[in-house]
Length: 269
Image (tube, rainbow, N blue to C red; front, side, top):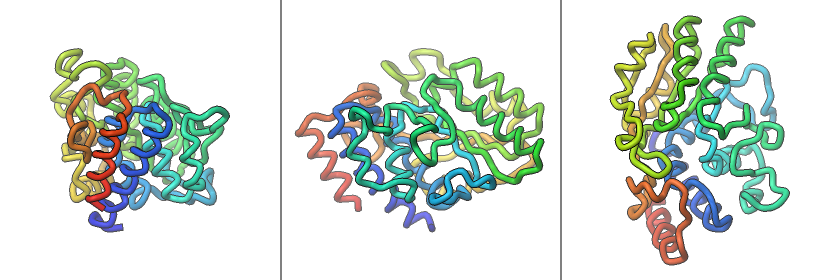
């Protein structure tokens, strides 16, 4: 898909994500809206995947380390054909396999369980190293939150990736500047991220993570070093009253807010 078509798909995913969170009465909608453009570009253009064969050995690997935004991943997987779209209505319901955090034993297309922050990148480093050891040519992608980068385990993984020369690994940091309860700048501010990653031996690209014209080439880039994309995004992207508001990290719109958001996202289609 070309960027304009990817933008259309991303708007559909945002709309369905809003509906699922509202119906469930829970979710992490702000961070889901910020990362949806990246997920859309990955699943509808970049990743080498087979929805009817989710465990095919030569597939590319994707790890959503910021696992609390699972609903965005579920909607993307359903849109891409990994499971039926009508199952999205079971999100967070009793006995549903669409839990609040992704489970690789339940949901096709999920590579590893995530939720505890700081775990996804170390697992992705292991996947990329395994490919090097076995001679496989799959590429591994991982998306973290910017608040999540405060976890020391991430920096240990970053050091290891540079040491092992994992140029088959791409880290995307969803840099929406907010974490649960506060702005990143008010907690443990890691910005600017680029010089820190470069000091650890990584190649770094900075982009507008909500602009498909920038997202696609960054994700498709291949070089001689592990690659980090610092994706500057907006919490609540696409919904006016949610955008850049810390309270929408983990909040559900009321009926009036839902109707406003629904109208805004529907108008953009």
